[in-house]
Length: 120
Image (cartoon, rainbow, N blue to C red; front, side, top):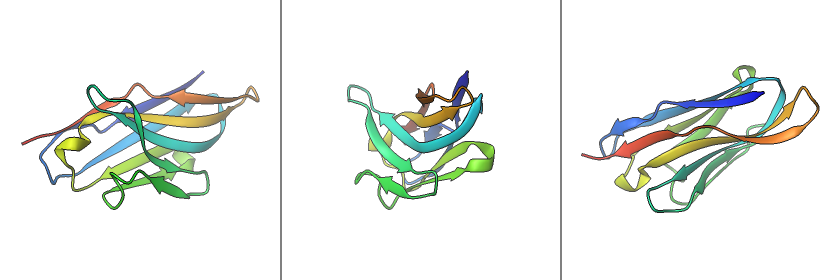
């Protein structure tokens, strides 16, 4: 059994910053690509940022230059540093990862989501 648990969401004023964390736990051998998705009210879930096992990153145009994805492989944790936040960044943020389990199976997992609200 593998779990992804996000933390760090909350209410922040426009222009402010938040740091999200997502920790993976359970029967894990390796974690490959990790992603942060987000879903705003009434909209489809969208990919915000991606990081590979060796640290290569990719960002949606809407967050490029403001968000930074990083990971600590020793802690099985991925982070999303969000700066210069805008009201349009308001969404539930989800962690997603491709995990090779000790049962020798590759499975894609989702976290439960954490709410980020940007408002004055």
